Length: 299
Image (cartoon, rainbow, N blue to C red; front, top):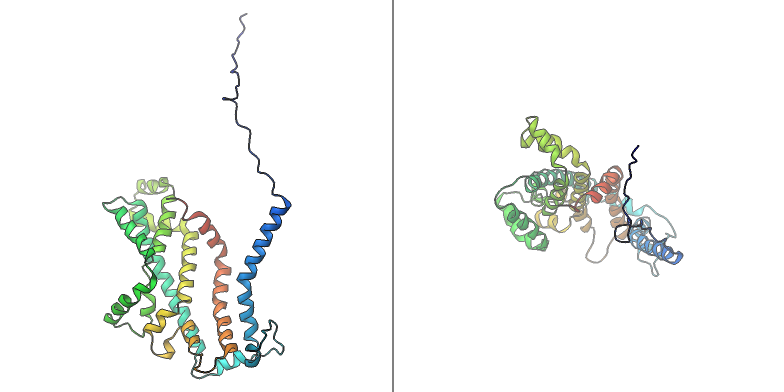
């Protein structure tokens, strides 16, 4: 009976598989330095928030006392009572205006950015790269350059002293187009090809396939747009004239007098302004983290 022999290749240093690399464990010194850096960064971020909250519960004298004290010697709600008791400062109206403007602005940014990003990521047409480059180039232009052109446009549209002056001008978000375009480009094309075979058109693919898979980047862009509109201070002062139409950041600036400033009331308003943002982030935190991790890295 014949025997079958099999020649086994000889492993050489060139053909031998590479040994798996192991990460070197971080030493105690490196770990301590890392935690120390994180602690310092946390203090830098949290300290102003704690100071704001502490000052909102101080009296006017304690808020300007030297040396400053972190813990109010005599905690008081004077700042909150004076804030809501001032007839010249409709704080709740300002808060409602800010919420309405931020929500409408965010919705408009998501609609325009996604509608512009999808063709730039998936459709092939002449000049696509040029259009995308021009959109990206606007990110390098300082924002204050657009103040006067936007003001003239809003004036011609008769939108001054109205909510549309705050909602519409910033709706064309170059960053939003870039952010979503990077994510759309990373989606598998097989999903869209399967939908085309089933008879779906481009609009149906966009609304029924692409957008449902883009909840994380859409939530991230939504939060960033909401924060940008919520914290906008300069533009509302330019285009709003009626005190009742002001947003909260712009309205709080009117509490500063010529010779005195009610710091507890201003800090109380700032603490009030942070509540909606904290609530929003608590609900969309996991989407934001996923969106930042998956978007902007491929394209």
